[in-house]
Length: 265
Image 1 (cartoon, rainbow, N blue to C red):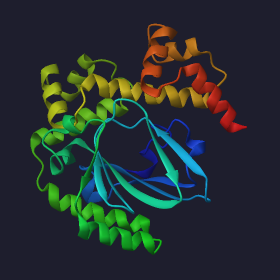
Image 2: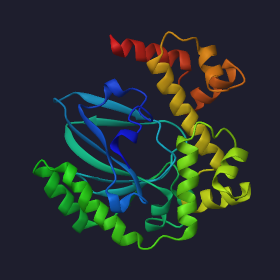
Image 3: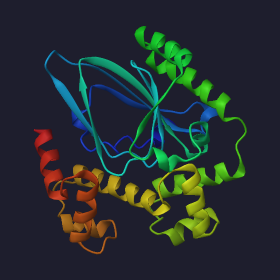
Image 4: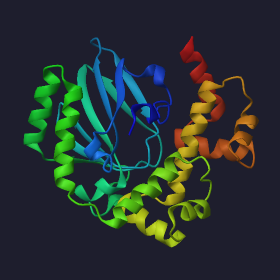
């Protein structure tokens, strides 16, 4: 994956509030079937200060290694908030569906959960690199571990990757009918792939992409009417957008726009 294709504005509702050292990096060439991209974060906050980081994550598993250990996080139902204090670091891989069997046979069981993974040797190697200021290089270490664990990919895993890619990036994909047609399988086939490799429904994947895009659009176009935003994304009306947006983010699109505007000043 070319680095410029990484959607840096999506999934992070308030990018201005992120720690300075937050970035997304492309997957290594031999891991592009397993990792969508890497995300790295480092912070060092003064005593008594905290940074609340809200994320509307992509519908996928994330594998993380931080100063405390390793874990796999399942897909989330709504936006989540992590409170950062003191100093620390984390390296995360947004996993493609083909990587899911490395961690679980039932990704739905991980929904809205963070499950520790006991990997002391891997953690020690990553922590050593992080401690010496080479956190970027730690992605190579985790990538090699992941590729070695995954082995040869099944045809169904590659089909799941295609489904996920189209659902999370294809603006022309607006329904399960269009998604099934693009993947070349039935709608029931989509659901089987989603259940085995993702942990959320195909419709939830499409809806998550649209909500991420709506938030990014509001943030980048604060003068546009909310009714205009709803129309831009093909929603029936503003009320429909308001309901979906609030269910995911916990605030209305209007309140979100106000918060984004105040963050700029």
